[in-house]
Structure formats: C-alpha cells, structure tokens
Amino acid sequence: MPTGAPDPATPLWRAAQVFRLLSCLYALGFQLSVNADLERPGLAWLLFGVLLLWSALCAVAYLQGFGRRWSWVVAEIAVVVALILSTEVIASAQWAFDNQSWPTTLWATNATISAAIVSGPIAGMLSGVAVMAASTVVKGFINYDLGRNATIVIELAVGLAVGMAAQTARRAHAELEQAARLAAAHQERERLSREVHDGAIQVLALVSRRGREIGGPTAELAELAGEQERALRRLVSSAQADPGGGALTDVGALLRKRASDRVSVSLPAEPVLLEAGVAAELAAAAANALDNVAAHAGPEAHAYVLVEDLGDTVTVSIRDDGVGIADGRLDEALREGRVGVAKSIVGRMNWLGGSATLTTGAESGTEWELTVPRR
Image (cartoon, rainbow, N blue to C red):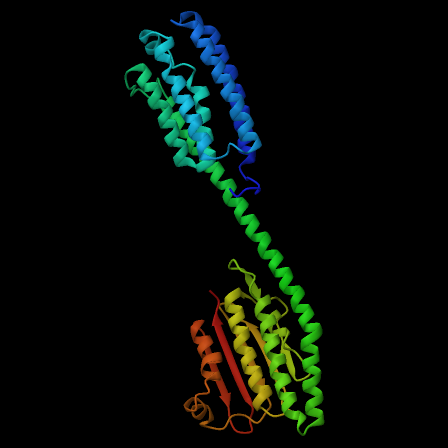
C-alpha cells in the first residue's frame, strides 16, 4: 500500500482489534482458572503481562497503520509461537497433554488474522498452520481426530475467510478508483471537445464556407480549412467514443456530430449501442466516406446518412447526389498508391467482421452501405 494511500482493509483491521480485545479477556479468564495448576505460576503471570503488552502494541500499530506490513506481522507470529512454546517451561507435560496450549489458541488466532489481512488467504492459512505446529510441539503428538480437536480447521477457515475478505475489499477499492479516474478523464475530454468545437472547428468551418463563396485563390485555403475541420471533428468524436472498460457507445451520437448544411443525418428514436471500439471504427469509416463526398462529389453535393439498428447487425448508409465515381477509377487510385477507400473504409469494416458495399456510377452519385455484426 503506497504511503498516504487509504487502506481499503481498514474496517477489517478495526474488527480484528475488537477480536483481539475479546481474546485477551478470554486468555485472562483462562489464566485465572489454570494458574494454580501450573508448575511456575509466577513466571506464567510475567509472560501473561508480556502477552497484554504485545497485544496493546499490536492494536495501536494496526489501528494507526504503521504496523500493516509483513515485518510487523512476522514479529507477531514469532511472539505468538514463542508464548505457545513457553507452555513447556511453565507447565508439566501432563498438563500440556490434558489442556489446550497456553495462552490459548483463541488468542493466537490474532496472528492468523493479521497475516490474512496483510497478504490474503494463503498467508493467513500458513500462519494458522504455524500456530498449530507450535501447539502440536507442546502436546508432543498430532491429534488426527478433527471431531474432538477442530482447532486446525478453525485456523485454516479464519485465514481463508479473512484473507478473501481483504482481497475483495482491495480489489473493489481499485476498481472504484479506476472508475473514478475514467469518469474524470471522460469529463475532461468532453470539456476539451466543447472548447474545440466552440473555437477552432467553428472558425475552420467559417473559413471553408467563405473561401468557397469567394472562389479564386482562396478556394485552396477553403479546401485546406475544410480538411482540418473534418480532421478535428474525427478527433473529437474518437475521444468521446472511448470511455474504456468495454463500455457501450451510441454510434448515432457519434455520427450526429457530422450533421451540417450539406450533411443530413437520420437516426432511430432509440440509441444504437455498440462496443466503444466498434462504434468508433464504424463512425470513422462513415466519416471517411463523408470526407470523400466533400472532396470529390462536387461543391454542391449533399450527403445523407441513415443509421439502422437491425438487431443482430447495425448498418450505416452514406448516400450523396454528387458526380459519382467513374468505372475503374477506384482501381486506378489503388494502383497509384491512394488507398483511402481500400484501407479507411473497406479495411476497417473487414477488420470489424462486417462489410462495406459501394454503389456508384458516373453522374449518379455514390452510396456506401457499412454493416457490422453486434457482438
């Protein structure tokens, strides 16, 4: 966990310290009931004082946060194992055989819980095994009767459950932070898009329109301004179509941005949702077709965009009333190395697993039908 970053497992740490307090009270009751039967009761009380002092230190360390690391947890496991093994010093072998290990495995479970919160279920269960191994050494035999001695099962279950809870908390926290970052980035993209649209795009559109009206040498500047306007519109649409995380995007909303006095866009009443990447590529292919209309269909040509949601597929039709494409012109352009249609339109649709169909002819306009399957 980075320094200063909030720990998603903090509620688990707090609950663990409540359990620590209750286990200390239980250990105190156990100490009072068995102290007279021990061989060295004075030493037992001294070690119990160590137990209480260490428990208080652990509670402060875990609640304040500076103890939430493996070095502290390893120290806690070492102290727990050492206190369990001290049973051989303060009690007789017969007492250890007849009773649970001192100072009770319930209190020793605190180490299992701490390890599980720090590093997950595997670490928690291994810590539980370490605690039970120390208890087995004290007793001098391995008890295979889980019906009468289910402590090992409890230790493993606690390590597993607490560890999984800690992992789930951290994973949920990470996903929430990622979602917040994506939302903030999306809002920033929308803000920048509005600024670009209100500034540069409108200026370029004005220059392009006025340049065509004036004609002459300014026509070339008008064409350059129009190309840059279209490029900026594609960039803005692409940025808004990338929310991330496999989200769905309304392809109709992307194409609506291309509407102008020369481009008419018709959409269904309901949003046409596709995976964000698919929607962006489909919109880019349609935008390229519209750019070709602006560049080659003639100064008076109009384009008409129709979006159809057919359930299993989505189709975008781009039709214009311009001069059309003469027979063989596309093949000639391909031979000359101009691959805009082949790559930007047909290539995109093939990559999406869809299709691009062109209908055209000299003086009859053009119509692209772009179809993608809904995954």
